[in-house]
Amino acid sequence: MYSTLKRTWFSNVRADLLAGTVVALALIPEAIAFSIIAGVDPRVGLYASFCIAVVIAFTGGRPGMISAATAAMAVLMVTLVKDHGLQYLLVATLLCGVFQILAGFLKLGSLMRFVSRSVVTGFVNALAILIFLAQLPELTNVPWFVYLMTLAGLGIIYLFPLVPRVGNMLPSPLLCILLLSAFSLVVGMDVRTVGDMGELPDTLPVFLWPQVPWNLETLLIVLPYSLSLAMVGLLESMMTATIVDDLTDTESNKNRECKGQGIANIASGLIGGMAGCAMIGQSIINVKSGGRGRLSTLSAGLLLIIMVVFLGDWISQIPMAALVAVMIMVSIGTFSWSSVRDLKKNPLSSNIVMISTVVVVVVTHNLALGVFVGVLLASLFFANRIARFMAIFKTNSEDGSEATYRVVGQVFFASSDQFLSAFDFREVLERVTIDVSEAHFWDITSVSALDKVVIKFRREGADVEIVGMNQASATVVDKFGVHNDPQEVEKLMAGH
Image 1: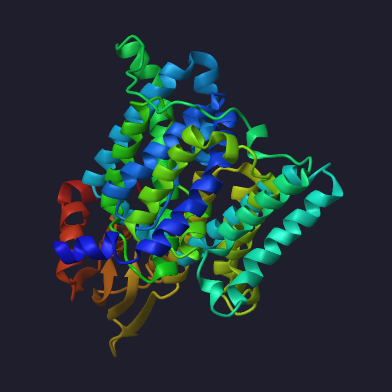
Image 2: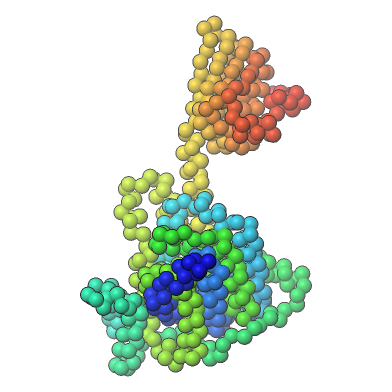
């Protein structure tokens, strides 16, 4: 117990606190921007980011991962806020949390093992592109010195770690923010700042029970939004957890993460915050800045609320160019450049899955839809590939009255047509043996194909015997097969 507590909380204190500071600074403009997207007051996103980060630090299953208000969740709230207002959004946030906790108990987090590496790579690349595109408004129609500040920020981020001795003393993104902010204040440059994004709150959040009629009508209004928020939130959180697992060479408890996300969203809804989930951009910032433990997530949330409430006058003067430089660094670091180099080496199907995921996410800005398309394509390619591994070999007796068909491979919905076409029903035989000792029947489609083969041979007067069936296949065939049921056989044969 003590060793686990020390490892997840206090094994990396200095780096976790510094990384949390960088994340907190980068969270402020994003939380404001996501609030604007959802159509709510900036404090709704800021309070949510504070609350979710703090709660998930204790309840989450992935140490070092940052969760807060996100764009993916914000876009799902627009219609609800526009049609029914903030109070209904808070109810939807609470119900979203309930669904996510249920998902954790149902162990739906384990479904991530069905997401292929190509889909994860496509998801990462798409997010990197979206993060970069999100910075373009801050670099459009601006004075020339804004570009210089951004380039200077990138120079600090990439070059400071190369300085001997002092290069590892401070996260370079934090140094970038501090130096560019100080330069902007001293020179008095007229640049866009965090304060221009929206008004920062000057009070701590308080308990806020949603003021809505608690009846069936309210439930029916928020239910579709809550389900969408829960699904998208868990999907993005699970994908981000997988990416952070790879970056840190550690494992996460994804079912615990589902429950943690739900608890955090319920807490957010009870203080007037919107629903949120894991943020890949901020998680990358945290990891790249040295954050590894739960303390980095906790400090990010606590420092965020301290900064906006008590240091708002100073925070509001941070130039957006500094934060843009940090986010461009995140975009560059997030993108899987090896996936581009390996396009010629990887199978065509893997490339199609990866590129399709990227295109759908970038075009629609819908992470869930992109991952769904990627998983669907990956499943189809996999089924097609496995279906090719089935073969049927035929041998006849010397007098030609008997035939033995040896089935090798996997028989399921994608290979059932191939299975059927391998048998010659026009041949006059007295006895047919189907040897399935090297085959496996997976579903009702394959069982139905076996039924058709047996019944067609019997209709032609042949005695059919199936040999060598393994126990798992036999269980499926006994449950769904009808070739040994006289009444069902008669029905099928009557149709011919």
